[in-house]
Image (cartoon, rainbow, N blue to C red; front, top):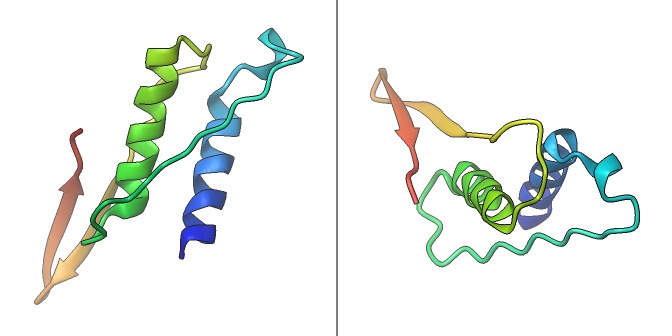
Length: 82
């Protein structure tokens, strides 16, 4: 599960970071999940985006993520604020 989340975060961040502005740099993103009760992937993407923005990493735009699902035939939308 953690490998899948790592791959999604990597693909998402590689698409938005302007790497050509920092040709000899390496950006490492570490995310530690304290409680996994659903929406982990979305929360990790949102946290990584905010950390990159706070660090001043040039990006095309901020990335946001949310999750959706059904509970007893009722559609639910999960929005994770940090």
